[in-house]
Amino acid sequence: MAEIITLKQNSDFRRVYARGKEVIHPALVIYVLKNRAGVCRIGITTGKKIGCAVERNRCRRIIKEAYRQVAPLCRGGWDLVFVARYKTKRLTSTRLREVMLKQLSSCGVIPETKTGQT
Image 1 (cartoon, rainbow, N blue to C red):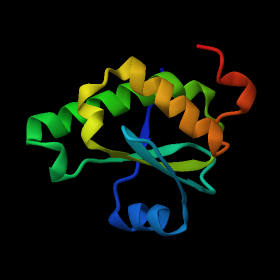
Image 2: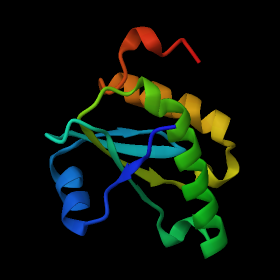
Image 3: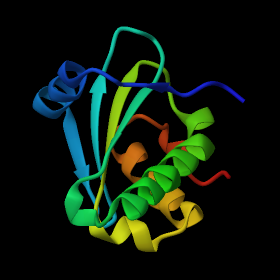
């Protein structure tokens, strides 16, 4: 399994928020921006509106697991920031993966033909 490269610097997150395209769903918001690194890098944010620390960490784990299943389909060279919403904590990683596939294919990170495959 390939290692997931994460965004850690606040400046990276701010750049993706400012210049990236956003795709909104009631369970997840994704900000997408091309990068020159040639690999997909991800960042996950969860606000305090989600709930206590246990619930926020669960949301991060669910998002990371859903991305782990989607990552082989992604084209290289994207910065992705996943923002958890209140409904995220009620979903399983399998359901969130379906949402993530639709969102990423709509913004061009995943080719349209591969979304039907699992």
